[in-house]
Length: 404
Image 1 (cartoon, helix red, strand yellow):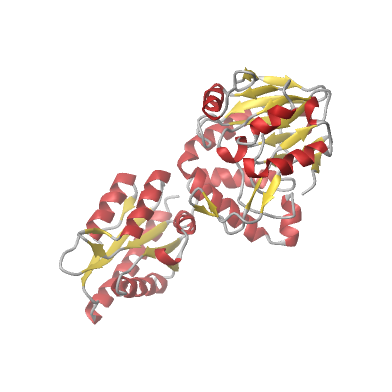
Image 2: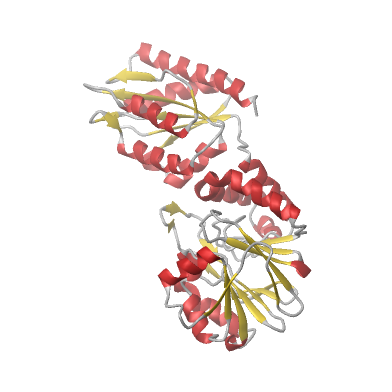
């Protein structure tokens, strides 16, 4: 990919990873990009680098614009491996550059590289850097989504370089949102935003709200948002900010995914009967088998909906492994404002449904109980109980959803 001018004298010099499908355990069926940005000014400034595997692509784009040795400032918004592991290659080409980074970022950087020969300037929220015709303002965003994280605002261009905030895992020949929706669709871009938020930023809703409020207090007028992954928001920057506020406030559809796994189809048969009950009560419902679904896709479906039902057979008196893994992922993401219930089958001893409810309560979720359990294969009476469980859950969920 060649460089792309995103604002006058500001260029995307990143790389597109068309092939990646596993991003530290997060399924990426659309691939991703590693975005970084070169500001051509009196003092040439590079904001972020890229994953080591793609640093040659970024360097080639930079060389097409300037001699890399003329880079004077190196802004490091985030030290996760997919953004910082190309830094030493860049610094070897620009040994006189000064790195601008948060204090926690500086400490973390020492764990990646020998920084003793680098000039490092630690910055905090409100600090500025003049590059000549551009003023860069730094905004610390700790835990969005690492402790070191910050964003960089280019005042004269109303441009927010937002590191992982507002990103998506999309590999595309399009660099901008309006280009992407013309070639693909609005719904695909919206889905990618939700997928990214659910799997990475879900735990940080309160921080997101506070930081967006801080942007307002600082008077940062934004008309373009350039994240470190995916599409650049040129036409819908205000829309994506509002979407983040809605997500941070726990916005959800009035629908019910049934997320389950099964050994000998008993739990699967229960899921179908429950689904019919939910549907007959007038709510949309999806049935998702975990061993047939990427974990990140199941997490996204959970987060989209106001309510969710979890099904598991009992294995060795505890949850089936795939269901236990799903709930472990979910607990780490700390979901809020969701209602849940559980069902499952067992042979000579139960335990899975009880353990599921224990996990729900640890997460502080709204709990619909008791769940429904079936010994061995569900009978006609068991299927009727499952159907009624689905209907009753839907009725309660509609009442719960009305509170938001």
